[in-house]
Each structure stands twice: as C-alpha cells, then as structure tokens.
Length: 195
Image (tube, rainbow, N blue to C red; front, side, top):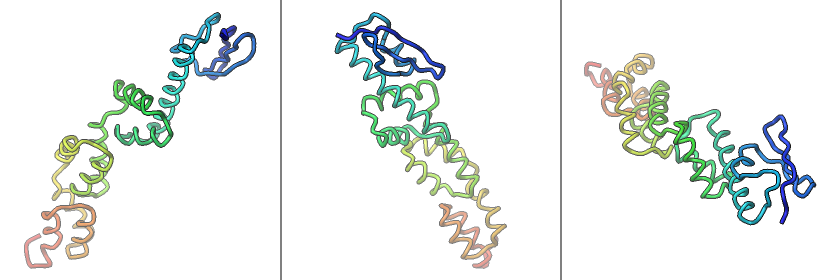
C-alpha cells in the first residue's frame, strides 16, 4: 500500500503530494485537509475513495463558483450548469447545499431581484412571471415577487406617454407582457375613451 511521504504547499493554495518518495499529484489544500492526507498515512481503498469524493466535491464547488461569479442564479439553473459540466449527481447535491446554507444561492432573492430588473426594463407582469418560471423558480416565490412590484398600469404609463396612444403601442405592450389594463390605456384615445 502506498504511503504519503511528503506534503508541500505552494503559493497558489495547492499541495504537492509525494507517495513513497516520488511525486504523485498536486491537490487543492481543502481537499488534502478534508481527505485527511498526512505524512505517514497509507492510501488504502477507503482513503482513496474519500479523496476521490473530495476532489469531485471541490470541482463541483469550483464550477458553481464560476457560474455565480457574474450572475445570481436560481437553484435549478445552478444545478443545470453543474450537470452540463458533467458533475456527478451526488456532488451536485453536495455543492448546491453549501451555497444555499451560506445564502449565496437564495431563490427568493433571485425572484425579487430579477422581477425588479425586468420591471425596470419595461416588462409587464405576464412576461416577468414567464421568465421567472423559466428560471426554475417556485410558483409561490414568483407570485410574491410579482406582487411586490409597482402597479402594472403605473409602469405602463411612461411607455404609453413616450410612444403615444394607439394600436402600435398596444401591440408593443402586449409583446412585453402587459395585461388588459395597460392595453386599454394604450388604445383609450383611439377608441374615443379617456386615456
């Protein structure tokens, strides 16, 4: 059975592992610590299985960290990214639990932030609801996020004012997911109603 004869840490947070006096692998420090590698330890099957599991976990967390670096993702979107990166299902579950536990992955926050951003970009409630559900967010969270937005009619008013009342504006608003109230306001002057 091979025995760990030396562990040498480098400046990048990695550890060069020697087995029986010969270089073997360079591993992340956290993997070495969680796998319990130490000088004089024999690498039996159980130790190698643990090391392999910790390497898969570290890689999954690395993929998750890269995915979350630029954009807040829902749990389902992050799981999809991990699966596309060929992360084993057990490691996916473990790597999702860590960011959820620390609050890095929070579906309620994602729903509210994305709903507000879409609202600010001129989308109506139906389009916002559709986009959030496509993100894999729970219907209840989506409902809460949409309910927390300013009134849809109030959000449509500046668009109607800027584009003018008429069928073209009504089609534009319909395409952006606005409801009947906003469409009626856009068509109001066309049909002789008060806008």
